[in-house]
Every structure is written in C-alpha cells, then in structure tokens.
Amino acid sequence: MIILDDLLIGGLRFVLDKVASAVDAEMNDADRLREDLLAAQMQLELGEITDEEFAEVESEVLVRMRELREQRGGAQAAGAVSLAGGSFGVDVTFGGDDSEGGSRPPRPPGE
Image 1 (cartoon, helix red, strand yellow):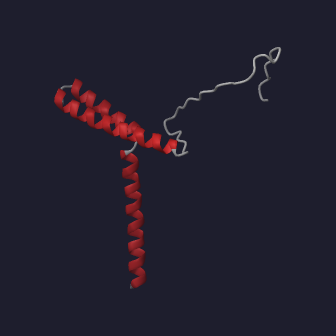
Image 2: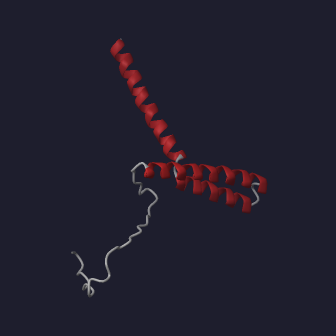
Image 3: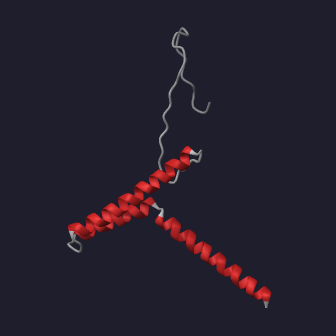
C-alpha cells in the first residue's frame, strides 16, 4: 500500500512539475507576448475593445517584456549565453600596429 502511494505521489509530482514548466515557459516567451499584443491591436482595429482596454493590455505586455529582457540581461551578465531570440550580433575590434610595413593578403576561405 505504501509503495502504491509513493508511486502515485511521485507520478503526480512529475506531472505537476511538467505542467508548471510548460506554464512558466509560456509566460516567459517573448514571441507569445508579441502575439498577445498583436491580437489586442487587431481587436482594437475591429472595434472589439476600446482604446483604454488596449492601453491596459499594451502596458501589461510591455512591462512583462521589459522584465524578461532584464532577466535575460542578468543571466548574460552572469556568463550565460542565450540564442533563443533567433538572431544575435557580434562586435569585433581589431587592434594592432598599422606600421608593420605593408598589408596582408586576404586569406582564402576555410583557413
């Protein structure tokens, strides 16, 4: 009887953890927030919501997006790298002495 209870509780805990993870991922998805904002804009244009209702939705979405950006910035400052946004940029600065007397020939691809 105790083994059955342990299995049932363990299984229930596993399922609830998965549900909590899915909800957290859904709430913290910037693409989902953008979709919510676009849906509210469409409702406004179709006359389904008022300007005040749209402003409320917009402010909530923008606050949540700002929080996500700050969280990601903190994670990146701690050494984590996130490529979830789909694009990233790289800033490169070349330092060196330009007085080496000549220029280098370009390297062939693959070197």
